[in-house]
Image (cartoon, rainbow, N blue to C red):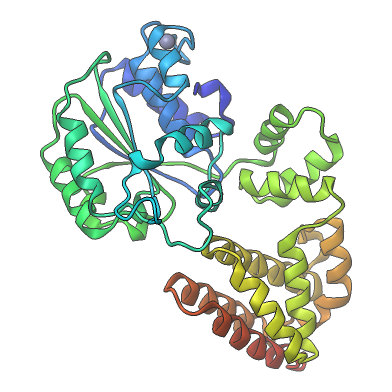
Length: 380
Ligand SMILES: [Zn+2]
């Protein structure tokens, strides 16, 4: 992975490169940024840059023996920790159990999301984590001497998924760091990381991609796609590259977005109080994995917000695909000042309940009943 492969966050790129040039590499760093901004790719490009034998002012060389190993993610001084799931094969899983799949997943593209990872390892309904047993692995790896590079680098992806025991072990290591070791924690939710850990690491903040950066990334990754659709996806994704890819594929496939279909069904059936259909829909939703369910609620939040903008604020602010727009033309009058706050809260509450492992079917049925009541609130 090289810096030139990743769009956006030019200021972060410069900062990281300067830290290497001036030999001020902080031993613990937290790469914090929204989903789909490329922070994991950045962490790998940074490690590759540090270890490169022929680095330039702006990037690693990409061809030296170290770079070649980094590009396959097999460099012996590069270590990864990431959420994994228990299964019949792995009762007490650690990251290394999934290393072959991990390499494939990471190398597939430059932007990575937790739901995509769970999809990739085929564990839709399991709640993944960085489990307690991982801390033994971390200690083992860090006690190895550096093989080739100057630095050992340990990249902890989705560090907020670290269980408490593992987090406390990591904290000890951050307090008394082994020599020439660099920890890069990659995360999306700062509040979910122990304060004690946060105070031990240097915070590197990533921004969402701009529309132009997203567009450039899409053009590189999907050179044969229609330029107009690429432009639309870049505008609609709100800086989340993964979302842009998903929108692009919907646009290319004639709007068959599962979230959109589910959203319109949820709203229609709730509005008409068709409870038999709502129960059927709850079944469908329950079959999705938890990460997808959470993503669905994010999608619902966005759609409700856009409909509110359309009905009550200004159509100029609205960002939707053509299919969403045509649904919203009819639906948006039902979203207004009288129910927007309540609807938003209902959706957040449902997402929180799913996060807390509540029974999906109950959450969805309950949500539909409450949405139904809100949609019948009269416009003030
Ligand atoms: Zn190199």
